[in-house]
Length: 306
Ligand code: FE2
Image 1 (spheres, rainbow, N blue to C red):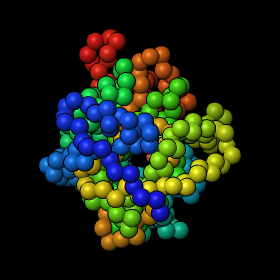
Image 2: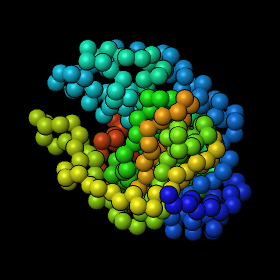
Image 3: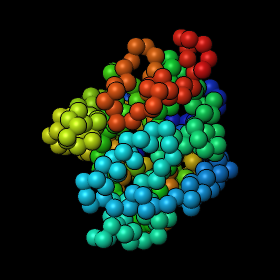
Image 4: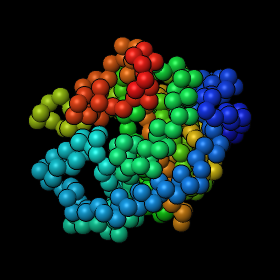
């Protein structure tokens, strides 16, 4: 196991990234900023997420075995860009389509618009420090396109295979940046993130998108051939709750299953460039009813404040 490079010192908010932090990010494709979230931030987000789960009625999406139900499930996922919806662990259902455990323990994540619809998540997502980081990274008009609350529940939280976020939040050229915060301390036993330092220098080669054939699958990979991402040199990000992990679009990262008796809740947002002539394709899986212009911007350096 490779040792984890020591992160540079934290920036003094709200000044954005220090030159040392920016250099670390550009060299490694990720960056750790300790103690970004306060205990109050984390408690408020956790309580809000618990409220979403408590009011969630799973019967509408609990069976996946027929074509009609697959279409229902696809529509539920593809229509979540401006909603707050719950998604289950793959193995949460028995052969009869019923949940095999309480819904609180069976949910994989909530997505994909907590950042606009739920106040505790909105407060964290639109914190001026995030705009300051985006200015450091050279964004002209950063759009917050997606938020997720990831449960990674004790014993059942599944692995997330090696991937790059730019495959899922694709722009031409690539501009996606992820902000990821654990709300609980992360270790290798409760499924911490693993990152492959420097892997972001390899361009994104495979994209997840809406299918173009109405009779075919709702989502496809392009090209369809599986891609074996190299995870040599991966480092475990064993970090305290509240640490910010900044993730480059092309950084290879993953997490293992949670085999511990502790959950590993996390919140993340992803931003893409909405200026500079960058294209957000209509074939991306994540869409808003109003098109890309409906994604909220942190600021617009070219066209005034947003
Ligand atoms: Fe990811």
